[in-house]
Length: 101
Image (cartoon, rainbow, N blue to C red; front, side, top):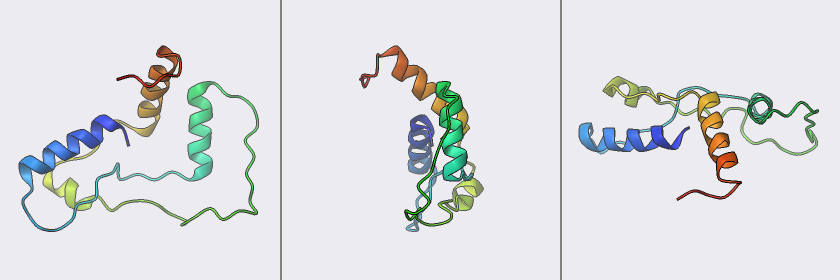
């Protein structure tokens, strides 16, 4: 999830939500580790091979948050993962790999 979307969700919740229940904040979409690795490779222009150590545990099979309650209130993430990664990588390159403040 892009930082701008997370910040926007926080402001939205502070303005429009006053219940005691928890809300999940997320994009409502999921990606496998392989899909995520391929997306990063595409973003940075890596054309090599990606290999996986399948002898190691890979965690829960799905890490998708249920964001339906927040969506029913009228909020959803605006920036797709591919665009968020592209923006983050462009910033990384522009700052020479330094964290911008």
